[in-house]
Image (cartoon, rainbow, N blue to C red; front, side, top):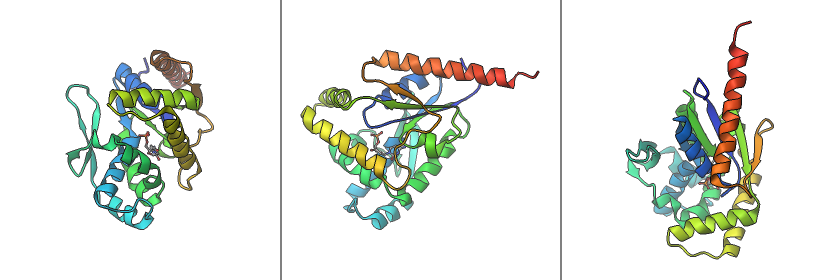
Length: 236
Ligand code: DC
């Protein structure tokens, strides 16, 4: 295991397996898992609750400046729950309505600037696995390990379908595929911090992998990186 607290960045498109993998990798390493998408979802929830048009950059940005986003560690799972002005919104940020609007809300620099600052503060001591879209490119461009997770659209839609079924929601596979590719297109073509593989990120295609295999692959890379860093720090 690495002997110091690394920053591990996992980026990639929606439903590529990032968050499940990141959570399990963090658990194995005794690190903190930080779901950065949850922060943009919390802002989106506030936008919708306040009746603000998600397409209105200045109204959304003004609201974002006055929001308080914080975290609470769940005593049972050890995971961080996102709090919006002190309220645990763990479940409310996963609704289809939030999912439909989060790409627009997260595209504004007025939203990204305070959220990115918070993420940098949370990761500055290391010992974190952070998943998102711009972690390796913008939030932690010097992260110790950068992973870019991809999977083909069919595999991603099928995974999201199973997840939603567990939550009791029935959305057709075709609609899910359309929704995912639309969100990816929006996230990759936006002006500020678009979804992009960092030049030094290692790509993992999870289309044919089980969750266990994804986790093992990342753990191997973490061990390799830790060993490289140890070797580099041994005095001659
Ligand atoms: O990971 P997720 O599906 O919960 O993310 C929701 C949205 O938030 C995603 O469509 C784009 C945005 N996001 C972002 O812009 N940057 C991040 N680091 C994480 C998420």
